[in-house]
Image (tube, rainbow, N blue to C red; front, top):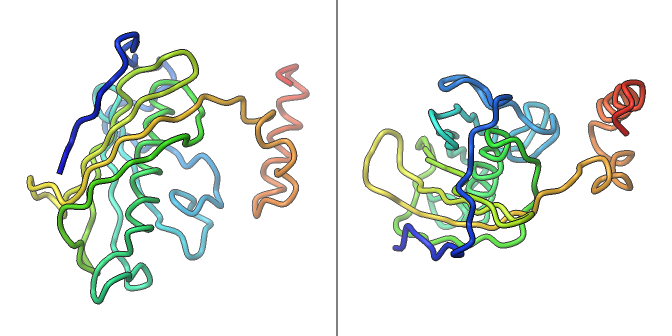
Length: 188
């Protein structure tokens, strides 16, 4: 299993945003209905992210029975989603909103249902609008990796990127209010 990837020579190291949650504090969900981190997503992963000291976060989730793939183990797509979410949440620590452009995962060991999955994720750096991130998954507090991932995300302006989909979101009212606040403050 590889736990590193080739980074471009022109990579600018990621820097923690002054607006990042303090180390040890929760990284907020970006969307209350998000399948990965949203507290209002009934069938979601319900990952919990805690900001690290630098551009990293520790993300934990319970591997519920509804996430079964192979007999008694997590579905690979669920693990992929957990990695995507974990790395995506580190973007708030560096002050960006981004969407996934490329996600690569190495699966090393089966992850049993009923276990706790811990993902150590970080944003490594940027090249123009691209964010480079990586993560390693463990069972609970073990130090033996069960999977690793790396990804490239593209920085977006959410109000522009999602303008045609806000109305059909499960959190449409939430977004309508947020957009109205932005407009009143002159931010749109």
